[in-house]
Amino acid sequence: MLLAFLLAAVLQGPGDVESLTAAADAVVHGQVVGRRSAWTRAGGQIFTTVTLRTLETWKGPASGEVTILVPGGEAGDLAQTVAGAASFQDGEEVVVFLHRSASGVFGVERMALGKFGVESFSPGRAVRHRRGLSCLQCTAAERDELSLDELRARVLGSAQR
Image (cartoon, rainbow, N blue to C red):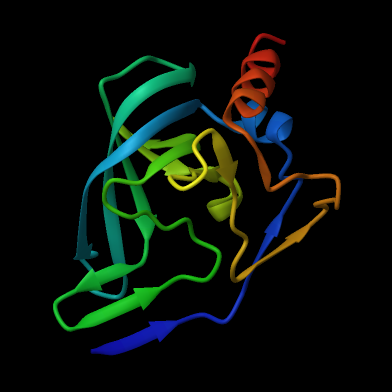
């Protein structure tokens, strides 16, 4: 298998929960129920379509399933990794900050900054990974691990402002 990737991605922050909530069209707590990767029509890049079963909607319209498009994935014998992009695994429980990119399809707000994984080995903990990601205007005060209850409360509190 041939692997193509970028070494790093640089994003403009901030990446705190309140800023992500304000920028997002939707914030969803869900579980990954499907992933499908394919080449773009022009053939230059692979994108993965991720389907989430919604457990809770914290901001935006409620929906039973949410479709997310993320750069990178595997198509045939080729895998593309996009540095800083959010990645998803089948069955994974997540909280995602989403922006609408097309009718019924969302993208993850600020790439990997907009995705928290809910830890299966430590239920109730939400963790964000910044592998391959540098963030301008992000601060050390932006926590990448917090309880699911605290994350929910911060999103709901910000969404009501």
